[in-house]
Length: 408
Image (cartoon, rainbow, N blue to C red; front, side):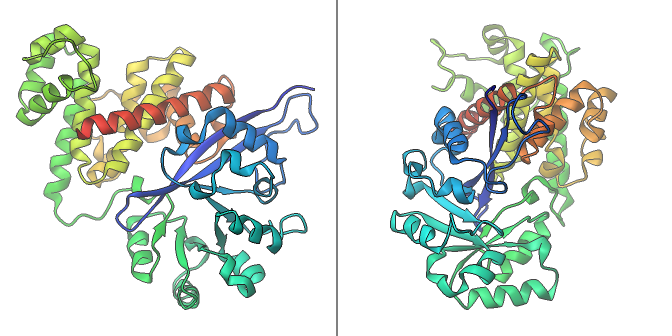
């Protein structure tokens, strides 16, 4: 019998200030083609896949590579009852998440008590809490409420009942900033969902206009027809960008042996490709001031698109730009079609961004699928789970280092 393959990804959990509180670990196991389940993969925690598969995947990747120094939120009844859990998921860094249908004879209140005695925090969705653990409320630290499952006054009433118990509350599936604001007013302290990657309602359109100009400049810098002198002129025309670029190039993060004192020298020493990339990232970072998670998402998508392009024979620089511009709507607080309407990119790139059309659009679709835990789509041929997961983990590491360097 062959050996199955695994995919691991993460979804951010944010606090009221929209800083990362922790990451939910998403996991997917694809059985071997000659195994008993040829029709695809089964998600852990929903179907009882053996604990060894998740723990083996975590052991290969390493918890730090996936979540850094943030807590890992992990679901999967029988997985979390494994005897060797603490070896790879230390109690002080792990929140055990219980979802509906997971409590069974093999993962009971007794098992939860054991995990708590070992130092693990316990989170439970509100269905599990209401139907299985309400009588043992002291075992639960966080209640997870799917805000899409509770509409209008129903959510208000559910929140009132949970707040009275003094529990920490996490709002799941928060889709928009408006939903985030409402959940914050209701008393949620933790938030999970795609809202950070969506436009906000911004009354001052000058903010949007300024952001749009910088996104346009980022695209101009990546115009393959722009020559050496045009690149130098574009950067020099933006005093702030020129200063930040020179400061970044001369920082310890780049590690040059001698200082670079002019933009032309930077282009000569580092090459136009590197300068294009760094200048573009600095521009996106400036646009996302105060919204560093969006910038981190843009860089992660850009690098993963670039890696997958290399694996599939597509144009790597264009793939990087598609990933970078995929958050233009969130950065400019405008619909994506409006955000890129005036951006100097060709029709192929616009179609890739708006409709995931063509080879570059297909790469972006794969990256977004991985980001959302749709691993079957992300790793379908001509890619495979190892290539997709490797590109994702490399993108996490690179984007984290780059965000730190850009903030320096």
